[in-house]
Image 1 (cartoon, rainbow, N blue to C red):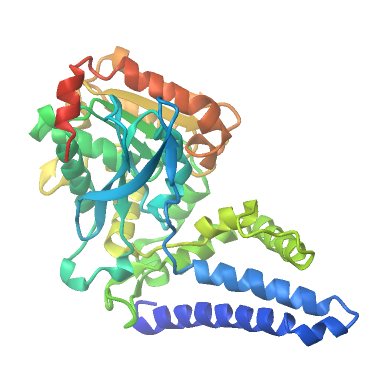
Image 2: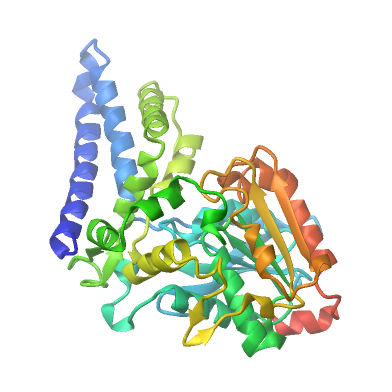
Length: 423
């Protein structure tokens, strides 16, 4: 699998499927077909439209699509994005709310590097913007990063987070969603040892695998069943000549997408079948629920091979975070060094990706943190997506997180706080 040929073959299949959909849509929409008293041409055009849209989204980076936000003054303020720290593998992006004074709450939202773009957190950002100034980690597609930029593994990821936190200052409130939770905890511990004055004010970890063995899931079972040699042979490919990252070893986004969809193949199949019927009947819309969801879900990015493999080997198999044995840049990272950063854990009762208990394990590792600065919340009936972007987030978790930020921000002077986060 570790060859450019396999990567190009997969991209060729995607491209051909997109072309096939376009051809079917065009042929089925030909005016003369209206003379035929059968529905097959409408179905062909509908099938082609859905297929073409789906396969074209797999190579497109979605836009944030957050145009404005209503301020406390009752006016709509335009929203733009600006990169404040540029790195080869990811930028720190700030959402600029035009005409609004800096907010007391300054939030760093750490997005996953797990196959989807940071825009997966679009609704999370949109829900926080009315009450916070928001920064997001915007990870880059590995296929677009030249080999000359070097490697990127979990240690590099952790150091990126350290740089971002240092840039934003000690008044920042960090929220890590899913996959980056253990490395965000490690970055905070790294700062506690090296630059204690640069630690964030609070740390919220949402549904992350701090200790994958605390509550086994299909994901953790897979990690135990497969060997690293098998994983490297099956999952890793070399980027083809079409992209700037030609020759870079990656876990391709298309391969990840196939894995995602296979976990709920029947549900996805039914969703696309229903959408084809709606399209044929003229009931589908460009921005309907199906298209909004799958435009984001199908937009995948390649992951650096060394990041994916080191995540599986060191965090899932080796349990280096769970056992407090992680080493970054030759320095042991002791999570017990965190002594004054308030930490909140959020889990979903029905989370089948990071089951309840995996993220909660972080509190046991925080041996130097007083009990009155440790908090947890288990959201009843919530799945993985719901705890950071769904109804559970909007109605219950978001208010709890904002209250936590307000109660445990350190009580520092607001003017100093705002000055410290200016880029």
